[in-house]
Image 1 (cartoon, rainbow, N blue to C red):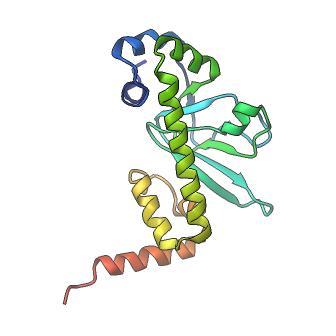
Image 2 (cartoon, rainbow, N blue to C red; image 1 turned 90 degrees about the vertical axis):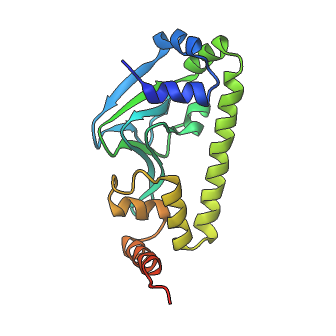
Image 3 (cartoon, rainbow, N blue to C red; image 1 turned 60 degrees about the vertical axis):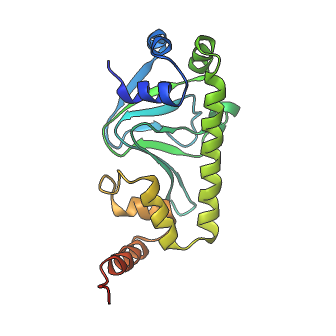
Length: 199
């Protein structure tokens, strides 16, 4: 099976050569996930990282009222996982499901170790990606605590420019930590600003 997004990811971000990539083919494990099906449910132990070759995933938790709080979307070329559950073998507090029919590549620690044997630079490159992910999470926490809904929305558009028409508005609102009504007001205000005639 051709996996162009995975190949690009490993070569451009993982530092693998074409030869390196060819040598890991036997370790690659794929899974097709139908829309609304789960890769992870709350209470289960997460044992994999999920790379999106094609499709769209989301990771979310439920609050005490049963309302969904979306932590992350993962489109083509993105990786999503409950890293705490993977590394500490603890029950996950999150759900990961498919917003669209999705093809994922599943990584585990064995897979990472095998690639690291083939290319000794891979683990360092992977660590850089992890640190970048943590940096984005810190930024997201800061935004939720002290940044306006307008700024959060603009950052969302910048981070996820390709999924605005692929997810319902209530999911975007959940990610932003606002109500759908507040999201509508933000979008209306931005539209008015953008189309305000020049004097």
